[in-house]
Length: 187
Image 1 (cartoon, rainbow, N blue to C red):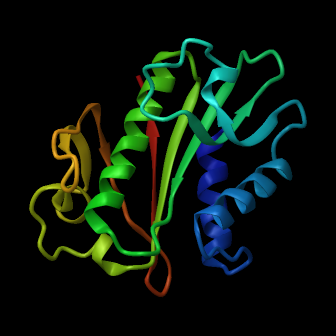
Image 2: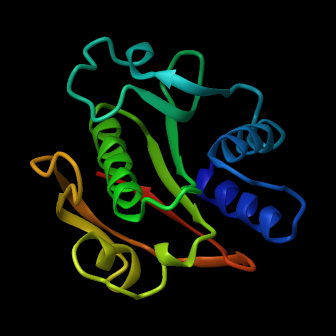
Image 3: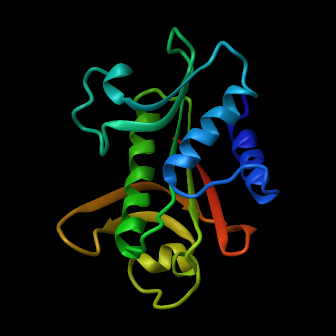
């Protein structure tokens, strides 16, 4: 299965206005429907699946539930897709949350998942236009790299993530102000 190809084709369908999205849940449902129509029926596709189902010793993960998980019944093949579509501003918090999703996917890869992907959609230009690009903003606006040490910019400032690899952000225009990027998280 080439999940990345399917994710890119899903974004193409949004760009062609064959699929309408309006919040994160709509992306989750529409993507699950899209994948069910294209993947071999040996794969199970589930939403908001708890990590305990795959790894009973799941106490050290950044999150407990996966947005979309695709797997074979014997669980030999396991893929995860995490999604983000902030619609209420909160730029630094949502950017940090995106980095947290990437870290979670790194943890899944280390625990035996075959493929993991992160997709972020944004219709608010302040997520991707270079304006006030210090701190976490520069990852999404100027450098376009999720990497290294990421500090939570608000609230519990002591929360720090350590991203193991570098992930290039390539914002792609789908329509009007709606942009997205997809990254593959690897070992």
